[in-house]
Length: 335
Image 1 (cartoon, rainbow, N blue to C red):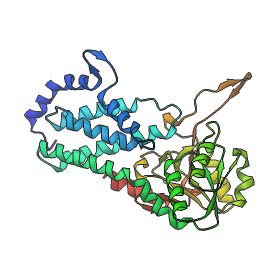
Image 2 (image 1 turned 90 degrees about the horizontal axis):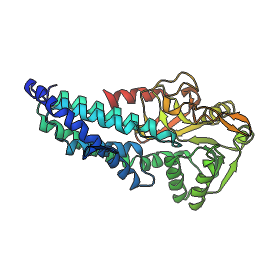
Image 3 (image 1 turned 90 degrees about the vertical axis):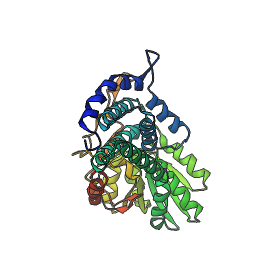
Image 4 (image 1 turned 60 degrees about the vertical axis):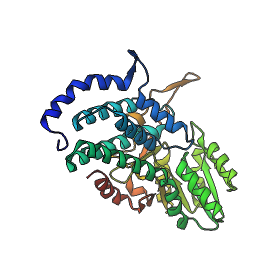
């Protein structure tokens, strides 16, 4: 590593075991690690807080407080911290696992690039902390930027179909309503979580007229709407998205009905995944075992993959993108 003279690389291993243990234990007894506690603290302070932002805050704090004296040691400590974050259980909250992985991978890439660019460890560490804090600050305002980018797509009299619970969608629609645009939102029920009811409640607080339809009525109501809008758990290299189950079938019906299908997603959800089918998903999003209800096996897959061919545009904090532009943006982020 450019930041670490050879003798310092050897020295780093003498501290490594103790430093890694310090990440996950205290007073000799295993317990929740400091990086996980910091992550939960940041997330708990903001009801709509993004997992990626909390992860970058926690990893940046870990770098600030670490006793690492070489880049090699810092990278190993960072890897251990990332593994501890990724071992967290986000049961019932699909999108968080993909967000977290994408944020950790991006931060690790920043560490590698900084190590190659700067020849002094202290300067290297300072640059990493600055980058981490800047990334978190930019991510904090990304939803407001997306809300601004979405405004031209919503006009007076627009009727839109929305699927799934998405903070960025709620924030964007609330901002459109506060700007005086009059529109109506039809929401899917969103089984099994039935999160359509929760979205309805939040939009009604903003004075937005809403209706709820059962998930099986997608084809029935499609002719009533002008556009379809959804969030995303993850935006893949191809420009397709992983999202709540039912997104794929909604995109198929929208395409057949010639309705534009828009996706609102923060750029920190861009991930280096390349699913090939609606069921080709990362482990965190895969279908679990069936549950028994009244003696019947019931399958409840949480997510599906919507291919880029079914998506009209991605409304992001780095601009309004076609699905084919996502791979270029990932190259910019990582290389």
